[in-house]
Image (cartoon, rainbow, N blue to C red; front, side, top):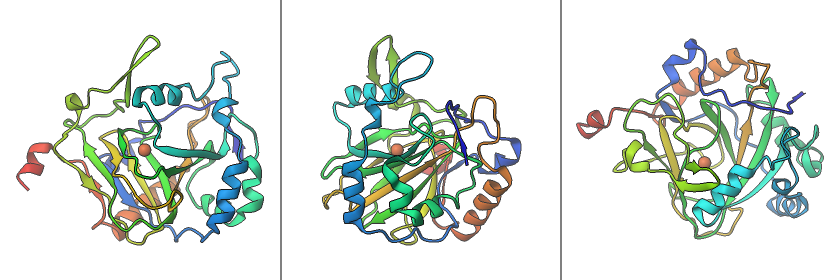
Length: 275
Ligand SMILES: [Fe+2]
């Protein structure tokens, strides 16, 4: 496995991926994730270092997660319990023995079509908190799976952009050191909420943060009743091949054939109104 020390988000993918550019969400044609012992997982989380406080950019000394820190300030709270099983800037190994404790999960992560892994972030939504509209700093598509999901109702929704954008708007506006919430009404069709449907409770999926923002309704079950894993592969500044493009194309193609009824696509808002 290649370990990255710098990363660059690739929002623009090669032309052969053009047919997927309006895709906002689709379940992935991958097997169901392995079952895990949630108590063992919670114990691992308790032993996991808070790398937000540890990682600093080698060039500037700035905390790598400064964006999230500003995000917390902008939102006033952070609706997730967030831990990292792997982070390109932290070490060249899995964090807190994740690979030794959950080898079956690492095997599963290796089914994703990356050449080089840059991060594995794990999120559990805090009880009763909403997750406001936001965009994730993925490549064109972000890869996810639910390691655990006991939430029966649809909670993840997408609000599409008004125009067919090619760049992420960004969740925040920065004014020097000040952070402001994004003026979503300028960019998003705020009347529309498109809920993700799941073929089975625990499964893999992908989403776009370019032509939609997403949010989550509150859940009232215990924390860790839904555990989301983000598989990240951003290219190194000198390496354009973080994703294995052939495998990625094949996976998206298969997924859209298998899960066409679940796929959410960007549409012109006027077309959507006309049904
Ligand atoms: Fe997100």
